[in-house]
Image 1 (cartoon, rainbow, N blue to C red):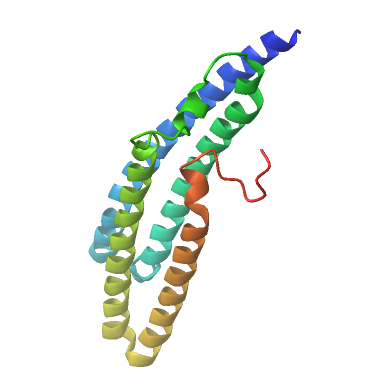
Image 2 (cartoon, rainbow, N blue to C red):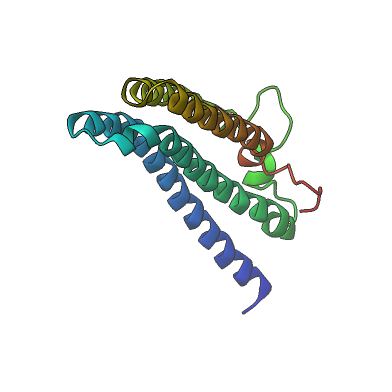
Length: 181
């Protein structure tokens, strides 16, 4: 197979992977919007204590799944930008254009979508921590609730730090921790 033909097939396969990943991102967002309130409702309706107590973890898991999909998307774009587009002379490729400095940020859509999802996750996390803590206080008392709240706060702090360290690579193909394509 000649190099040009290989690059073409590779590009088409990566674009298809990007399309499927975008679909999974929106499915994850929809799942996150529905599953947390539905889980709380079911835990209350069927008196399933463990669901109420683990809702904050569920929120973090959904956010991590979203981040993984978004990083997968950017990984494909990064590969296209650094290994396929440079092989085509005199053409400004899509991924390179997205990173071109201009009077507006061409990655705004990606950033706004991520920010909206993480804001929703923050609200869901805070709300689920409140609900789980209130439930634990009413059922188990002060000490178990304080311990549980400490665990939730630790998980929340860890996730915020993790998110801040990783959000940039999920919204740009420019960033690389070692500046190597």
